[in-house]
Length: 107
Image 1 (cartoon, rainbow, N blue to C red):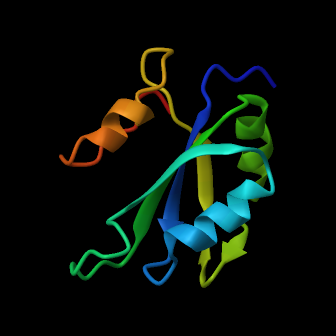
Image 2: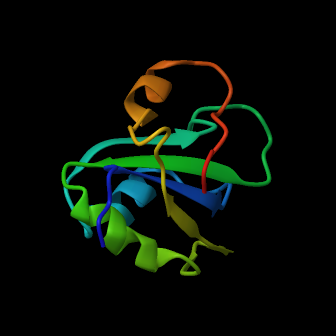
Image 3: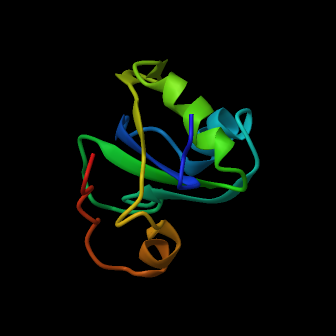
């Protein structure tokens, strides 16, 4: 598989899942450069589902991580897709922003 991004978007994440649990799960698939879970662990907002962005050091880890789609983690079947916008990863800059989550275009 030829991936042009190092970032995956993980949706349908259980509200009780922590960043550390996600880091542990995806850490088996490759070196993680950055991981962000929205809303953050310390958020007081009640949510029914969370979204996680994982940036790997190697783009090959993106293809491997997609095999976790439909894997039940905590109490939800995860959905894992590559995340890129216009052929270039935006997750690092999005992770620095405190605005709303980005739209997943082109997938």
